[in-house]
Image (cartoon, rainbow, N blue to C red; front, side, top):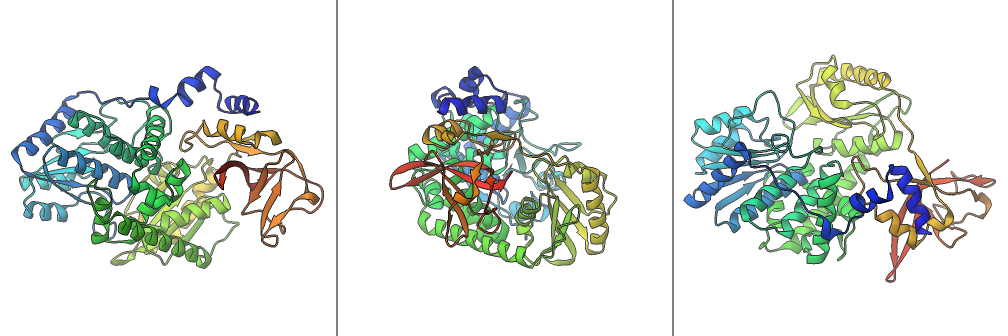
Length: 518
């Protein structure tokens, strides 16, 4: 049975069986992560860090407030400690520090007696702050992956995939930090590998080639070594890719979205190899994530939305760190571009917004913002996720411009469905489906369609609140979105959705998770 589904998925992804075996489902033992080229800048970064370690001078690893920043900084801290360096880390607060190295913090770093700053997941656009660092007698090494501007900052070494001609696909800062410090250490470390894999998923890097390989290797390392930092957040001993995406990453990101300076540093303590109080810290992370969920849910209930607008612009009363999550939920619910704004901390006249576009939309948000005829204080981002800062009086003009952007690129492609037989919803089918994982950017999860089912024979759970019905082969179709009120009671119904693993009493079952009807 599984072989029939394999043929369908090979056709869906345009792969031969040989390509599938060699590139997609290759045994883990055949996978390896390539190193970086020994360019002048790369060698300078190595020699600078090793020199400061040897001289016993104080090093500060300055990261970012998201998972990629946490992972890259934690890898750097752990490796430098192993090498005998005198090092500390700092994660900025989005509310008190903003993104990247800034001049005020450079002055504080210099006054605190540090000699070298390693900027992780930031740095390539921090020209003014880094110029000040050199004026104050510090040196700076940059380990980053963000887009390089017109000119690079002054530096004592830079590690960036684009400058290293690494390959076709961009990589995360965590990936970059892992490969670099693996070279400095002279050996691999499965814990640092697992952090690099987490950052690759979190920063939505294209899951092709080496990015795909590092995520597969990282998940295996997490489960083989029983790294409790991951297990505690997922509340389970054996993790899958969904556990990383739906439990671990949101819990870590919630701190940067809601908390300030002191709490940010707890993330570095959590991922320190020899750190204590992991159980207590994991509870703090999960409680904060629940707070984030509750706030986001209440915001969606309060926000006024015009479902007929070509693009949705909303104002939130919540902290700006939640804008992106709320915008993403609106985009998913209405399949339209969304922009959510909140007042900036400390400046009631400045509004910070997060923009999201449907995953299959032709709208390139970054390009659209570049062309927008609106006075913006700043903007940045990618094709389907971007951020912007404007003055309060510019909000009406932005809303009109955002609607124009959406109308200019109106097409949103429909998901291409892979038609299943009922027999595909089985443990054999599940094994085939999971062999194509991990899914993500540039490697989308397949979207499936079941054969027609007799509506009158469908069954529901919790008084009709959820669809939960057996399939002719003994499998099950389930849905949180579809219920007795929105499914026809007569005729035939065709469900669309995904295959999912369901474990109960030590046994594995395959379940069809429906989210739409054809």
